[in-house]
Image (cartoon, rainbow, N blue to C red):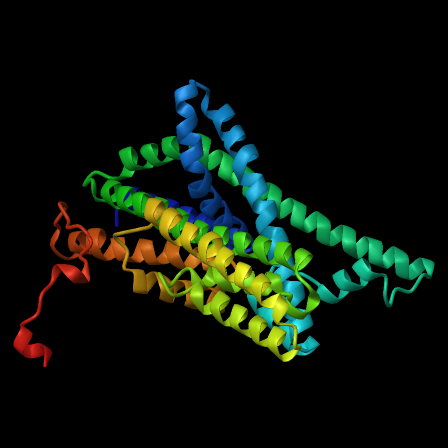
Length: 366
């Protein structure tokens, strides 16, 4: 082994060790990085649309985050807090705590939040109050740091991401396979991640708003129980086209109608009917047929996406809802772009195949 090769191996080992240390550090902020990638694809259409105003990249990035990014994060955090609190009120304390801990929803301490909000069970001694304030300050500070990191990473992805990617490809991608792979992943994530995830959250937020507004106007007999939780379920149900959201509001309105009938107050049935119509139009029709038609994915298999959305949170926690579709898109494009190059050296590649491109022998269908 000559001296040049030994030096290269030593440098390679040093670079590999450096990458391992950085990767280990990044694991502690995995959720932050995943949320930043999602927010990047969510605000990028706005960032690009501002090009017509002839603004600089930095100003466009700031405007995109201020106009859409930060308000969307705050709205999502508020919706998640409502859902987490209603899970606790619906289930027994131990079960609810287990669910929240498994989902890892921003490390929420629901018991502490509920006691602080209601003023129940609070010891007014100085030491207890000081400990509570320090604990609350630590939680708020941690959430603020994580939110700040998400915004900063998203900002630099918008501003410097394309230049860094172009430099890496020009430096290390002689075959052009890496360029095709990143282009395919980027295009698909821009549709699948932005389209499907935003559709879930848009549907959930709309549903929560509709149910909360309805509860303000409707009598308690026909009030929607746990509006935040049911709104979140409607958002998750939007992953299943056509029937998914109906599995939430149809049984809900039927149950409310039954409650009005049992209470011998048939005059409340029109209110339930209005809720059904509003749910069908505002919660079901608008997101499922308008938003999905504009931004849904046609390349990644819908069934695989649904499985990813189900498996992701159970494996990675709450941020798995964002991470799983990213991994799925990276995997499918690795199979269709990178694997042919690894196996045969083919650089042209093929587009991702769809099941409806294949036909079967009718005699074999029996």
